[in-house]
Image (cartoon, rainbow, N blue to C red; front, side, top):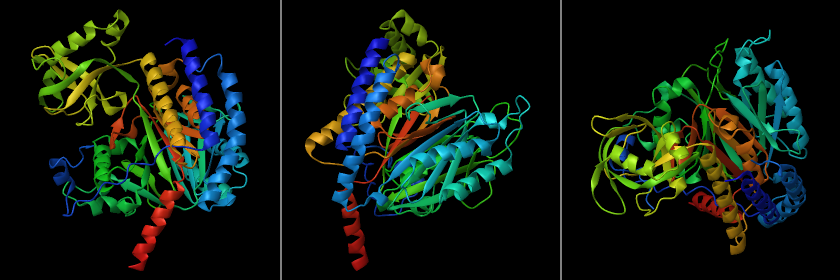
Length: 547
């Protein structure tokens, strides 16, 4: 896609974002929590019974897009939000509100945080309080460079206390990463700073939302024979019918031995279909100190091997969008023979039932590529695993992307970064800038089309209020050749404050199941529930209370 074509796509997205703000039609909420089996099941039993199977650059024109969007986003959002609040019985003080602040270049963590707080306070005027503050800190603060002192454990504790004292934040969670993203000084646009001392802050007023913080250590994890109730206990014993949205940050110690994957499987078991988003901290490889890389205001001491997070229930919905940065090559295949993460034989889903060695199928796929793409397949080859067994033609977002680790020439097998079984459908993918650009533009265009469809159907939904981005350290400027691509595409498509972090692994769903990703960006879009859903929840609560 040429630069001029991409600019055209951005123009369409920006115009559609204005329509979205003007009409306040946003996305459907998270998939309803699945029904709970009548008999108690452990995670081990659920796995064996397939319980988790899903059934069912901005370039030259950026300034023009920005001014066009800013005009509509500020004037129209206020009018439509007031209309929706009137319909739902809310007053202005009860409106969900987010703000994002970014601070760059301060020597001290606390000094940078104070600057980010001031930026958020200017946006947050009129909001009664801060219910949730999420702070993202660059890993450069862990280093001793140019005579500056690295951050200490006390600095991290002071960050939490500062947010409580200056903003009255009721709950605080935070993470250290390879870079951060927040609202800068350029017309409220998000800015990304990688490998640079920077702090980003997201603050939220969440009326009608119950927030339960949690801190999980490796020793706290239930085993595979645990019941659903035991998995719920470690995140505050939230009821599955409340359909919680979960935000979590893991340190490297917790994810090192597969504990994060076990946690995601357990939480999917306990809260099927509910969104779980977040990422793994990315400490500096030349850190001069050993400080907590995930932290928060919840009780408990930090130790290596920790996850912190919050569950959100009540008048809130979180819609995740996962961009994995790949484009498919070759036909859809079905695994014929595999053992663990070694795939030996496959068959083409269309065009015959002949079984072939996986390497042979790969060669056939590469033969259809241009010389440039064929070269790319030598260094950036991936396998997409289809997650919906009943979808005859899986689309780009239906694949879980996993890296090809190696080739066994002796028997024509491929070694993949995940376990596969016979019968699963796969497709080869390649990753590069053009693939990532095309995917993110497609995903955001799909998001806007969905909003317009809702508008045309006459089913109004509350507007989005905020967005968090959890991006891989391998994306950003290194992938796109320019800063701010992911975050500004998200902003142009939603018109809400964006804050985020560059991680060493990203948590987000594919086809309703939670996964740990690499080289991906996960966007979490926050909004109130529709008035109808809130009323239904109230009626259900009333009925239970009457009983």
